[in-house]
Length: 307
Image (tube, rainbow, N blue to C red; front, side, top):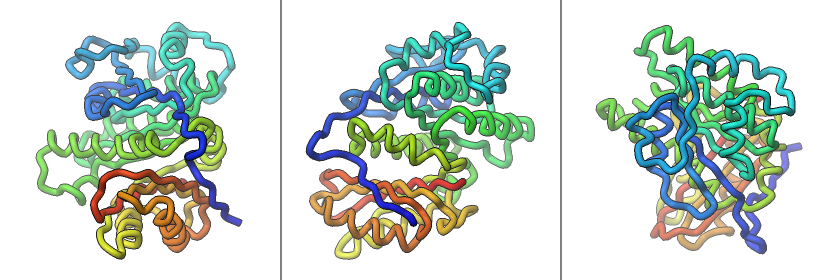
């Protein structure tokens, strides 16, 4: 029987320690869009001094030649930190409650570094979530095959992988040039991270780790609604996300729902949960919300998990 659980503790609102790691050029560029949030630290990961990491306070350099081999040996994860690369990553993420990994799959560092980071996080018992993009279908077969291999390896090491197919972006912004399209994608990838940062409190990382245990695939949707029917409209809009096109919400075993309104939380959240049950009747629902000056608008972010 599906359950409903709350995220965030208003009586004890201590925030977890969070670190966001951008891997490769695309991942590091995305970090530029993260606002300063107490308890959150950003870390760039690349193989060489690159324009995307200039001016960053925290940087990890990894040799690209060794990354694929390390990532593909991650099926069995011994507790010890055996390699220099693992120890370097551990020095940067130790003490965190949650790490988020942001990357574009298909290249070298962006494809293989996330698996290595996830492997280290697992050894340190840190909740890890990865937000990754998959190449456009017009890109080379080699790039797409590398991305497939990287995604397979990543699923074995991190607690949760949220996949963003670049092709789906064309449904949201069909006429944007590539450079602006990648900026929009970066904003979308940051959305779950920023919403979690406003909702999740200390201890929720353990709850989420348990929730992610049976999810091999996760997808993202976000929606807006205005006026008297804002709850219905925002949830309906979120579930019509292009990243849900190739999955059936009725097959989801997990739904994480985060909502933002000016003054309606937590009353609006009850309606959000009810509406989510209609779309994903077989999913355990983990819900949370926060207040922000939105006028009469409501925003809802949905993460759906599938076995």
